[in-house]
Length: 149
Image (cartoon, rainbow, N blue to C red; front, side, top):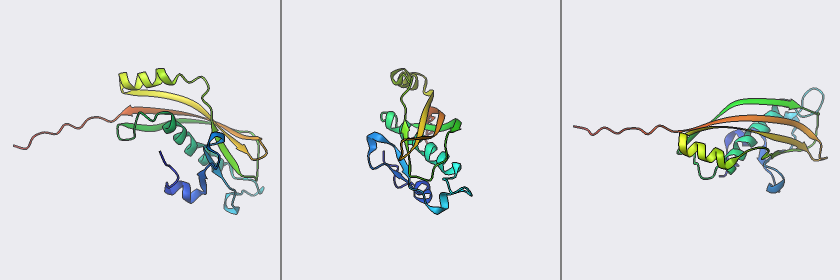
C-alpha cells in the first residue's frame, strides 16, 4: 500500500525511506522541526513513529484490506532516548509477534489486538526513540440492505 501521497506526511516532511529494507519512513530535518535546543522536536519524532507503525501494520497484513477492517491506534508508549539534529528514519521490529495467530484471530473473531515497537534511528546509527504501539482491528459491520417495497 502506498502511503507516500498522504497529506499529513507531505505536510510534516515525512517520506518513504530510500532503502526500504532498512527503514519505513524518514524525516529530513527542516528548521520548522527544531526546538529551542536546535534538535528535532520530539513531537516530530513521535509523528514519524506513529505514521510508520500504521505502514508497518498494513505491510504485514496485506490480506486484510482497509475496505474490510477498521484499524484504530489504541495506545502508544514512547521512550525518548536521545536528541538529534540529523535525518531520522524508522524501523519496525517483528519481536514476539505471532502473525499467524493474529491472522487466525482476525479471520475467526473479526477482531484482534496487536502490539509492536518502532525504533527511530538517526543517520549515525543512534536510537533516538523507541515507541510501542498497540493497534485494535475489527471487521467492518455488514450493512443490511432492505428491499424497497
